[in-house]
Every structure is written in C-alpha cells, then in structure tokens.
Image (cartoon, rainbow, N blue to C red; front, side, top):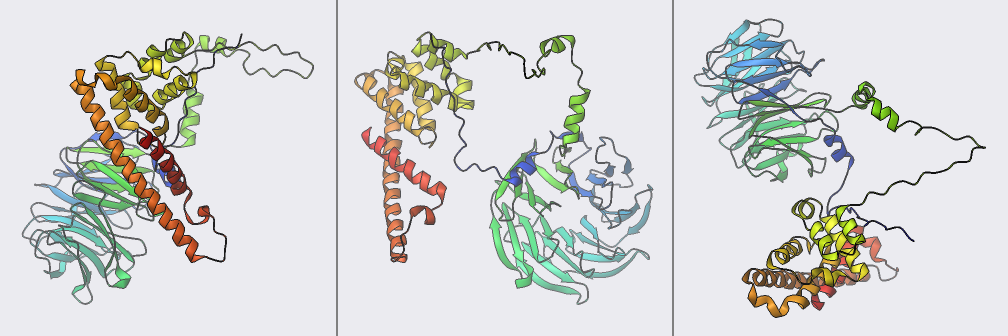
Length: 528
C-alpha cells in the first residue's frame, strides 16, 4: 500500500522582494542593546580612532561608551543646563560641546574639567564641531549667528549672521579647513568659506533643516528637513539631484556607513532607513520611540540610535566566530549524547547497510486529509495564525483539495462565520500573483454554491458585492495593461524592422512574467 504524501507547501518570494548584498549586509546585526539615559539623546558621535568609543549627549551630561560596554567609561557633567552637540576632534583626544546657557566647553577625553570655555553666544548653542585643522571650533546658535573660535587662545576669530532663524545643522569640510556647511530653520543650507568671510553657496531645502552631511568626496551634500531628504551636487553650484520622501514624519538625522558610503536616515516615525547607491531603500530598522540622533561606527561594527524617551539603542554586527564560540561552549546533556549515538558512523566498503525507516510526522491538516475530512482540513488551514502569517499553507491545502476533486465538497455547507473567513482571505490575497489562480477557482465555486442564499446573510452579501467590485476593477486594469503591452510590442517592432526581435530582449523578465500572469488572471476574472 502506498504511503500518504504530505501536502507540499511552496514558499514563493513576494512580488518586488529582492534579496541583494546590501540587504544581507544590513540584516546581519544582533538584537539591539538598550541603555537608559537621563534625557532625550540629541547627539551621538564616534571617535575616528580605535577603539572607536562614542560620545552620547543627553540632558546635562555627556557620556563616553566603549563599543561593547553598557556603562559609561567617562562622563562630563560640568553643565548647568542641557548639553548639545558633543563632537570629537579628528585625533579623538578632545571633545567640544554646546549648551542651553550659550557656552561652549572643550574637554580632554582623559580628564573631567573643561580645558577651554568659549563665551559669546547670547542663546542656546545646538551644534558645535572642530574644523579639519583641529585648532579651530565652529558653533551655531539660536541667536542666528555662527562663530569660529581659536582653540589655543580661546579667542573668537569671526562671527557671521546670514541665517534668519535658528541654526540646527553643521558639517565641516574634512578636505578644506576653511569650509563648512550650515543648515537653519529658515529653510536654507549655506556653504561658508572663512577666507571670504561669507557664504559662497545657498540651497533652498523648502523645510526647516535638521541635519546636513557631506560625502567623503565632498562633491555631494545631504540635507534633511520635514519629510524630505535631498541630495545636492556642489560641483554644479548646488544643483538638486535627488529628493527622497520615504519617511512619514520629520527626518531628524542622517549619517554615512564606512563600507560603500551608504546613506542612513532617522526620523520621528521611529524608522531608520538604509539607502543604496541608487537611493533606493534596501533595509529598515524599527525603534521603540521617535529618533533624534544616529551614528555608525567607522567600521560599521555598531549602529547607535538615540531616541526622545532617553533610550540609546545599540546594534552590534554578527560574526561567524561568535556563532562558532557559542556552539562550542554549549553543553549537551546525556540524553542528547544517547540520541546522536551512531549518527556520524561511516560504514565500510564491505558492510551491508540496513536502513531504518524514518517515522513520518504529519501536520494536523495532513492527518485530516489522510482521513478524508476535507472540510476540517480546510478549517485548520484557515485558522487565524495560519492564514495571516503563512498564507502559503492555506493555498497549498486549497490546491491539494482541488487536485483531489474535493474542493467543492470542502466549501459546501458552511455557516456565516466560516464563509466570512474564506471571503476575507479571498479579498486579501486574490490579487497576489502567487495565489491568484487557485483563489479565483475558490471564488468561482463559492459564487455557484451560495448565489441563491445571499439574501439570508447581509454580511456575506456585502463581502461578495465587494469582491465582485474589486474583481471588475482588476479586470479593467488588466485589459488596459494588455493594451499597453500590445502598443509596446508594436513600437519595438517598428524600431528594428530588419531584425527579428524577441520580446525578452526588450522587456525585463519580471515584467514579462507579470504580463503572462496578467493575461491568465484576466481570463479567469472574466469567467467569474
């Protein structure tokens, strides 16, 4: 007697889902480690030199953490009010920060007391940074000015007022010590040259600017504000290249990865999005609260995100050595050793091997199919968790019932509740190219079985009317797509009259496959 063959479930990729090297690279991070700070985390900055410690600015203090430490290895608490913009110098030995009281303090990483204190701003200083020569500090304030300070003498070198609103973004040039970029709530991004003492370039972002960022080549500039992330070409006089709108709320921060210079943006919608070189989103990190700051370690080993609720979320990259070490350290019990005894035995050439039959374990729906309980098997496949998390299993059972010729029997004799589950599943997945053909068959059978009793249940009648409406719209859309396909085929044929043209040479494989599925589904829709 032939053994029962379990239902074969085909796990097909979703339409548009592409697994690329970038996707695999950014998925290779561990679960985040969360560190609670004393207030909203407004700035995170990694030291450019190993071991790449990072400074976290929150509330009235700045904490310096190691890459793998959950407790601060250094704290700077000499602030009377909220601290802002803690940034490292290029050699990682000095740290500069602004404050709500308008003072700028300079710290030595190995000490605790401020080495210098710059006084001159009349309002809060939200952004500070070292220029690339390491001997000058630039700061932007709510008093609408930015100032440049000399580190050795603690003297103000220049003060320029060109913005008409708060200055909240700053990015110094690493190639030229006299250039830096500022962004303001007056919707403008300006490039300043200290040699001329004024701005040399102005870009209109269109929204209050929260962050500016220069690419390593400094030919491209990134500005964020509102829901928009804009890329500017500085070599073409500040021409706008790309405008991205992938976030649902204000984009507050941006940074670049070390490997491939991939752009990362964080927003108040609690998402961190990673873009590839074509500025397409390849990965997404979800956070528990709105994001205010973000930074990536110079070797991409750590991604740190600061949130409004005072939580610092730190993600570390996975390594094969960690997995091997964890496997080698895992201790097995005596029962495991008994279970695997003899599994690794390799028979000799002259040995006669007697194989032991492997016991077959069946799913619940397979057991019911084996007992010819087709209605119960379909009910099991339509359970809430299965139909929402693994619709492939539900469709596989439907295909198996159709192959056996018992699908009509499984759908017959149902009450309002079970029929509602089936119709909801159809409405959700009938236009998915992976499931459209078997689900159209189900819809056809349901209409034949329950057409005469629709008036007895207003809920079922309303769902069937909705199903017919969406099927009609889909049929019209696919007819239009077929017309467009014919127009494109005619255009391609007229462009190369002397050469035999294959459709595959001009149409991408994905579009060709979609068009084939469109034509087949359209025929089934018209039949219903």
